[in-house]
Length: 549
Image 1 (spheres, rainbow, N blue to C red):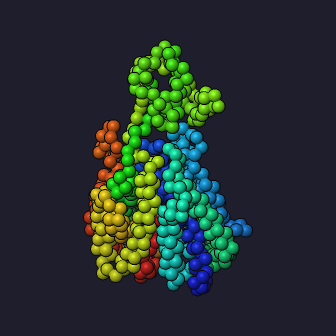
Image 2: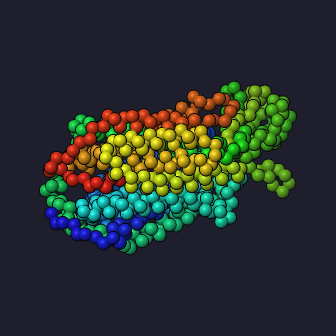
Image 3: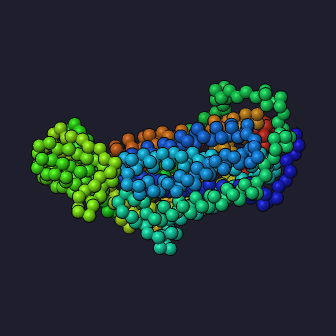
């Protein structure tokens, strides 16, 4: 096998530069998805369900991209075709997702549109992210991999900070930070537009600067022969059965950590809005119902024998009194419309409408829910502030990552970091001062740094070189699966602490997350660090970079 040549700093930089644009897209998604869905009318108890899609897509897409890109070669290269396709889809969806509330859909239609857009966005981000990780493995020798991953980590965090603070900066220069009910503010919409533009620039730069090795050269530098390729056979079940105890014990810690962070991404905006910005509550009408019928929509027109063509619900607001609803007589029909306007004569005009006959008009009542008012300055200022808090977390993570190798015991630094993160989560659910939240997110950043550094490093030290790639692929499941479980349980747990007719206490979920990640800190004690045998891969002291899902 030929030895891979040393690459200059700028060639190493070029291999990962596109990560900057991809990470901006990822940061915008992480910090603003719950805000977007809350704005278009999603129930707080349903927010966690929307977060099933990102880890599910990562669980499916990343292994497939890795597998298929190994077998790809064309004029653009081996990995870059997947970057091109993923980035193109990401740019299109980034221009659509924040506009989910601007197309005059019903609440349900807007949420479905947003879910489809979120699924496509996360899939495309994962597809665009994977090539940069693979290019380092393909073209960088062992001696320079530490530097290459350091550059990638820097660009990753730099992109995160830029994406997180975009809405705050755009609000500072004068873009509107509030909008009509159900519509996402300009600061968020234009943040996604700018992020899409930067992603385009980064991808074009990468395509110009990166020249992948052709298959023959690639095989020579990576020690791959045709006979070796034919002899490969991966039995994942066998690998799991024979997995060292470290695989399972570190995976257990991972479960609690990623479970907790899913709650952060889901409930942070509404927690900060309620606790630190005193966002007012509002009673939203989600439809009309009887004992056996339900008509859901933000625009509802009623026709009755004693009351013709009456607007009952418009834009999620009840236009009739409860007494007027109860007084409807005769044949009563309910028209649920996506778009409802009035012409010059004052007549109501509906589009994309469905009409239903009401079986028991005397029982017709408004179906309401109490939520934070997403149209207020307080709510949208809180949304921008959360972006700044995430940026603080990213910076704290970088600084704490420098400190981690200085501890004599990896396990001690791992457990300490997670404990600090637990304190950060709990205080986030308690603090009612926006500046004290900096402390919470600095502590959460300590946990994040350890989560990205030690699990893969500890694991690789316990594996034999022949199976490291397969085990690392399997180990990514310990990132995706806990997020899926947390997303499924989030609404159930929030429901336990909620009272019907009152605002859902989403801040409690931060305290729950703190307890969960502290359980992860306790489980660090069960980890037994392995030592690689002489013939195994030598792991550098630079902490391994895990999947940034």
